[in-house]
Each structure stands twice: as C-alpha cells, then as structure tokens.
Length: 352
Ligand code: SAH
Image 1 (tube, rainbow, N blue to C red):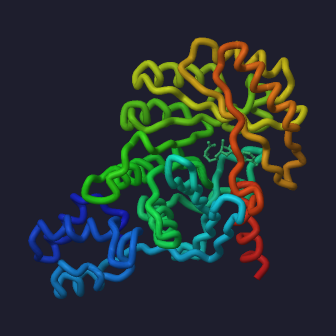
Image 2 (cartoon, rainbow, N blue to C red):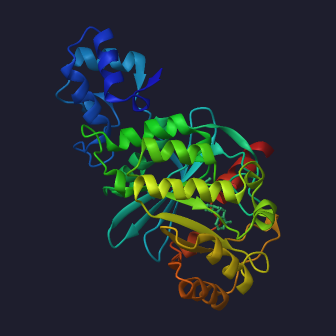
C-alpha cells in the first residue's frame, strides 16, 4: 500500500494517471489529505469524505493506497497551558512522540523525524535505545494532521525537534518540508518552520542551499570540543570549528539568524567561564542563544542548573553582546524529558 501522504502533488498526479483518471483529480485528492473536511481540520480520514472525487476513483485509490492516518496510543494534556503530548503508534509497531503547544502567536507542533536516534547525546532520552528507523515524509506530516484533528485547531508553526536527527534523514525531511509548503495542501510558510540539528555539517550546508527560508537551530550545548564531546558524540565527527564555520557560511548565504540551543547542565557547562568562552566563540555571529533548563533523564546522572544560575548565564551572554533567552517551559505538569514517553513505551513493549 502506498501512503498518499508520502507523495508530492506531482507524484499523486502520476498515480492518478496510472489509474486512468484525469490529471486534475490529483489536486482535489491532494487537497483532501491536508485541508479541512466537514469533520474539521487535519484532512479526511476516509476516502468517502472526498465528496467531489468520483466513486470509481475513490474505490481505485482505496485498493492501492492508504491515507496514512496516525492513531494516538496516548495523549497527555497539561492543565496549565493546553500543551498536549502524543504517543503515536506506527504500522510496524514503532512508537513516536509529538508535542502540541499553544502560544500567543498561534499553535505549534514539535514533530519527530525518526523512530529513535543514533546520535547518542548523553542527556537525551530519545537516543537511549538507538535508531529504529527513519520516518517517511507522510509519517512526519501525519503527526501534525493527527494533532489538528484531535484539537480541532489549525497549526501554523512547526518545529522539527522531537525524536531523531533530521539531517540523518535528510531526503525524507526535505519531502516533508515541501509537503508542508505545498500551496494545494497546508500552504505553510517556510518562515514558520524550524529545523533543529545536533550539528551535522554537510546537512547544514545542503539545508542553507535547499531551504534558505526555513529557520535553523543548532544544538550546541557547550563552549568547547572537550565538553561538547563528553555530551554529544557527534562532536567528534564534526568539531566546533567546522560547525561554527558552517554556521557563519549559512548566515552569510541566507541572512537568517541561527538559534543556538544550549542545555544547561549543573557543573558541566553552566559556569561563568563557560559563558565567557561561549560568548567569545559566537562573537559577531548573526545568532541567538536559547538556554534550555535540562530535563532530567534519570539514566544520565546529570542535573539541572538552578534558575538563578541560568539567569546569571543569560545576563553574562547579553553583556557580551550575545542575545540570549531562557526557554519558557510549557506543559510542566506533563513533562517527563522529551522522548521519555516513547522510551517507557519501548521498554514496556520489550518486556511483554
Ligand atoms: N536531533 C536534533 C533535534 C531533536 S532534540 C537536535 O539535536 O537538535 C531537540 C532539542 O532538545 C535539542 O537541542 C536537544 O539537545 C534537546 N534535548 C534533548 N534532551 C534534552 C533534555 N533531557 N533536556 C533538555 N534538552 C534536551
């Protein structure tokens, strides 16, 4: 079975032609996958809801293709701010997480790009069981659509910051971004999308060329290679000099500000001299530092920086001319660290 949500409009056109139907039907079918149906936002959940598509074509499609609907296995809802954390089950038994968040400027979803991850960052729950497999474009966009259906609300911002390393699944990530942007579908502006990478240098280079309007975030987390390598094995393949050079090249080419994510870990990377070293490395760059209080993952043995120390770190960066903010934590009451819902679920599956 083909998942129709894995296909760009041109590929749907090809399929429709192969089914012996006129090309213009493809736009109708494609629209139904992503746009509001009588049931609300999130696309149709049944071929028979495609009311302007002839019955014969619906039947032919049903035989060959699926709508790639993701079913939530679990939804945790924050009573504080409406954040919703989803665990979705995939066809092959894998599970993935997504988070829906409400902001003043609209609704946002954080999607996963892989089932598991092979980057092995020490503080991160998502990689603790390694990589299972890449997600297809349809499985990535399916997370957004399922959240739209569940909430009955449109989503207008997307961050690729869930489980997985997006640049380790570059081709499917690219197709996903194109699907989000397709005028016949969701028609989302590239400027409303942010992709976060742990620092895969060739990916950053390609991304600056292929998607100059999409926002880029880099998980930096350390002021030097020594500390970075102790937290993130990827740093051994792509040392900081190479990484920051690629970032400078990116900002020069795209004129877009890069966000550096910096997870504060008590005693590891949060001391004033770390802040000074970081400011020195980032001096003159078109960037912003987003300080993230560590979400404690008990397997890691690492601890969160206290609020006053985080504020001190921020102020230090600011006085050195590096714009910095501390990330506001949404859904505090439902928060295990990112990826923990899935990890717990994987372990449960394994025991059963
Ligand atoms: N692989 C990509 C995107 C997924 S992780 C990347 O590395 O950027 C999204 C962000 O959450 C990254 O900045 C990651 O380092 C951070 N993160 C992971 N585990 C965390 C934890 N326990 N506490 C705080 N931030 C965490």
